[in-house]
Length: 442
Ligand code: UGA
Image 1 (tube, rainbow, N blue to C red):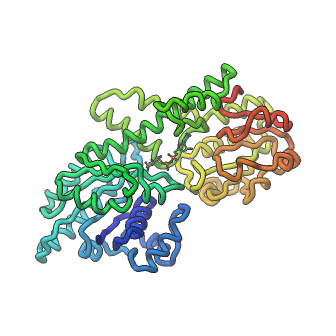
Image 2 (image 1 turned 90 degrees about the vertical axis):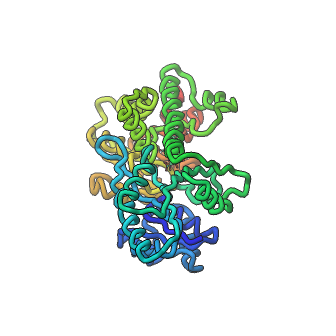
Image 3 (image 1 turned 45 degrees about the vertical axis):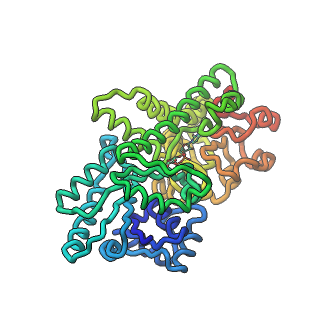
């Protein structure tokens, strides 16, 4: 099939590339010339493992093209994916200006094509995460412009940063919200190559598809906030959340996934989507106390590490050298949006600490915010020199099995605040560290 993907951000780029990988001809279109230029120069505007190689391969084989000319792309394609950003607005709901602007641009082009005698129906497919009712409103706006030969479908994405290619190529399920059987069948054919292992293709109304995305993310965020709350209680009661988590997870009704306590969830999705659900509830005047609590618990969880550090050092915190390992909101990404590390950095800087920070991918992004207020270290051990404590905020693989002897030699004080429970408390104590985990009994 011939496809246009509007937006070459995270979702758009992964979608365009994976659709090209399965044999389609894809135009990746963005109004941001700088981004397109990076792509045309064989680079990537974002970091995602495996994506660069796949983009380059599909460009070489001429299935994937990038540009800024939306009209030229739509002339040649029937399927048009909308993958523009829907950031959080000041009021907590999703900012849809990007969607409306693209809708208008596409509407104008469709009118022009129709006037030229083009009679083929275009399917606009919303990939961006949008509030329930957006599909309907976009449809109405385009109808009001006089467009007739189109349908707006909803096809939420369930990609995880750092594993996006795998998630797209081998999805747990594909959800489409459509208004006609014909559109459902076209999308079924498009996704068939990705569903060969008997994964379901779920057809529903656009409203249900839009809601599915929010409900799924809110559920996952709920699991995290729940386990974080249990972990904090374990700390007080002297129980170990890691044993509790294992004891719970073996119940297949509960399962193991997304039950890892930590420094709070971050990223561009959970915080924004949970707040968007809250905003939809407010709009409908329907109280959503569970979802509100998920957000509140998470905000409080970002304070758990700073609080443990303050309690350990008491009045002597000012002037201490603190090493931080992991700044990205999770491993395998350079993304620091809503990252718990930023809350920690703010708190420690305010307390007068000197911070030596390391992250395998996110240093540059953090540098753009904090400039010379922090000391940036390319290697994990470099951050430890003379440190009074190490704080681990992101569970990068390379932090899991470090040389503890070397660490002790480099650090002034052998104190570790482990926000991801990477190590065993008893082993750490026997190696001479003062060790704090999350919900490990202290
Ligand atoms: C999330 C969802 O997992 C995807 O399914 C969804 O498509 C995506 O949002 C989206 O809406 O676009 P992502 O934000 O990339 O994906 O990251 P996750 O791997 O879900 O992690 C989110 C946060 O939760 C991270 O800060 C992570 O550290 C935290 N987390 C995750 C925990 O604290 N504990 C866990 O057990 C799992």
